[in-house]
Image (cartoon, rainbow, N blue to C red; front, side):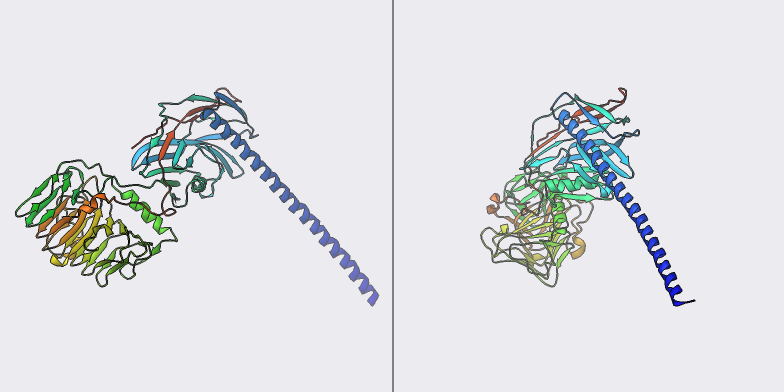
Length: 536
């Protein structure tokens, strides 16, 4: 074979290969172009379906909120399957200071197309479900300038809503309460359980702040907290025992003494050489609210805040007007706790207990009205220690939950200058249950049944205590400082570290009926029962 023939065959082969490559490329262009065209069509259809649901939402809102008696909406979903009503796809619970104001279940009008989900629920339009859900149109959740208006649309029925004209008509408003509830100083919670919970969470964060909204993915639940709770008393007694009829005070078993007024929801008694020098009021209902939710909110906030420093207060000085967080018990048994108030208030949020054991809690460089505030979920105990600043009990303020117990012992080496605020509806301990802090110290009395126990020798308390059933024994002494009568318990945190404030709350529910234009016998009802605006 000649070189010329070889070159000719090579040229022919090159042409064949080129043609093949061009052909493959042409097929690829056709395939990819077809995919892109289909995706474009899908996107356009998604947008059209979303708009159909938005128009339905606008129609329902217009009728439900009084914009007209009836209204027609073109529900143009263009499929025979239609949209399906699904019952119990959500629930909303509204509470103020733990008192339930509204508890309503609601359903959704849901449409599925090629794995995509679109839904109308509770005044909003949503796309997707679970953690993938997003908001298309906002629900009727209006929070502005401390006022929350919350109409709750609920859906009932089992029918299918076909493509075509839908007539929307006002059915009724049941048991209307149209006034606005005054809730300033209360903690208002709105809990929404929904299969579209992630969309709800995104929307509510935009309307409030990140601190206000928490998500429980496992239970498909969003919780919104609003309000800057305020305590409902001030320190006008040396000892104030709460806990209902069992909120007793006893000054017995030796020569203990309370110098100052004493108040109790239960009985007040003295025995032996025990003595109370101030006025006494017993069997008086306190009407004090537990502050558990406030402290829990502060703990949750601190855990998720980049601006709050996590420390061990027994090894780190607390200063510079900062808020600190400790996520476990704080034990001062080899080093003191030092607090510097030179630059203002210092706050410790403690998810645990505080124990002083032969080490002190020192407050230094007092400035103006600055104080050290401790908000804790656990117990307070001290033995042979000094806490606070002498003659200035307002500088140390300890806040606890309804389960917080107090045990102070150690004789003449123990001194407490400050206030403790931990009211409760019932005692934390049963009558034969030992005070849990006793297990740390193992001396003196087990204090069975006493939430607050000041025991042994010459232990001294200067300030005020609001807690559960309270006992003073042996030669301990509690002295009330009258300057505390103008000191209000402080449950606040700085802006941005606590849920937004709320002053007025209006919850309402209306009933709207949707009639399927394709079949007069097919109906879906959107219910918005009774307005419930409650002032506490």
